[in-house]
Image (cartoon, rainbow, N blue to C red; front, top):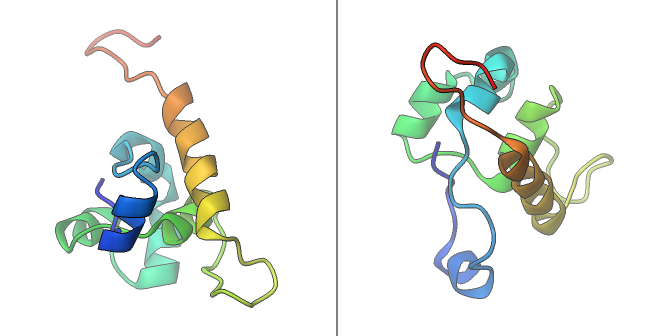
Length: 97
């Protein structure tokens, strides 16, 4: 699943994730609908999600804009997503790791 990254973010943070495994986000489909009124697939087709948007979806939380209680920074969200990606082991068809 692609992320929406500004050119500045790509330039200043090349180590931030630029993709996310759909299989990890799929169980949180309902929260994507609550937060954005669209399925994860449709959001991906439209260009993806920002790090903070996906952070809240994966935690089954409503999206919180900067400055609101419970909001996280882009840096915190990117680190959280990176940890999930690093721990992800895709299953081979017919085999569960």
